Image (tube, rainbow, N blue to C red; front, side, top):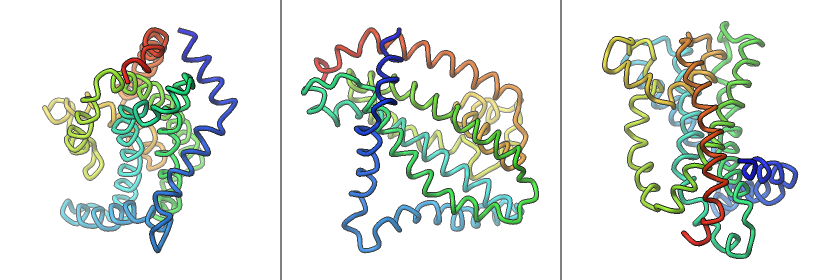
Amino acid sequence: MSLLFRHLAESLRKPDHWLYASWLDVITKYRKNALGLFWIFFPPTVYIWGLGAFMGAIQGKQMGSFLAHIGFGFMLFRLMSTMFIEAGATFAAHLPYIHDGNLRLTDYVLRTLSKALIHFLFAIPLLALVLVGEASVSPLGLLFSFAGLLVVLLNLFFLGVLVALVGARYPDVNDFFGSVMLAVFLITPIVWLAEAAPADTMQGTLMRANPFHHMLAVVRGPILDEAIEMSTYIYIGAMTVAGVLISAFSYSRFARRVPIWL
C-alpha cells in the first residue's frame, strides 16, 4: 500500500512535471484564439448570469442568492466531472512518458487534477462578484468552505487514481463517464435547491446517493449558509477512507501493469 503514498510524496516534492505542464495545457489551449485566456471566463459567465437568471426566474427564486448557488454549483461540478471524465484516459495520453520509464503514475493524475483546478481558480473572481451583498457570507464560512475544498480535492485525487487504472485496463470507461455525466448533473442540486428533494422521496434518495451532491455541499454549504445534513459528513468521511484504502491497494497491485495494458 505504501507505493501510492511514496509516489505521491515524490510528485509533491518535484511538481515541475505535472504543475508546469498543466499550466501549459491551459495556456496552449487558448493561445491561438484572438481573445486568449478571456475564453476561460466564458462558460462560468454564461452559466451564472445566463442559465442562473433563467432558472431563477422560472423557479421564482431570489436572484442574488440563487446566482451564487448556481455559480458555485456549476464550477465545483465542472471541477469534479472534468477529473472523472479525463482521468480514464490520463495514462493513455501520457503513453510516451510511461514507455520511457517514468512509472510514477501519480504525476499524470495530479496533472489532470491541477488542470481542472486552474479553471476553477480562474472563476473565483466571478464567484466573488456574485457574493457581493450576500450578508450570510462570513469569515468562518469561508474557512469551512476552504477546508471542504481540500477534502474534495483529496477525494478527487484518490478516485482519479482508481478511474485511471480502470481506464488503462478498460478504455470503454472513458465513454461511460462521458455519457453518464449529464444524468449526474441533473440529479445534483446545481440549477435547483436540495430542499426540493426531501429524504422520503425517490428524488431525494437519488440525490443523497450521489457523491457529487455531498462533495458539492461541503464546499458550497458553509460559504452560502446552506443547510448541510449530517449524512453528508458521514458519506464524505466513509468515501474518503474507502477511496484512500482501495486506491492505495489497487495502485500497489496494478500500477506496474499499466505499460502492458497500454
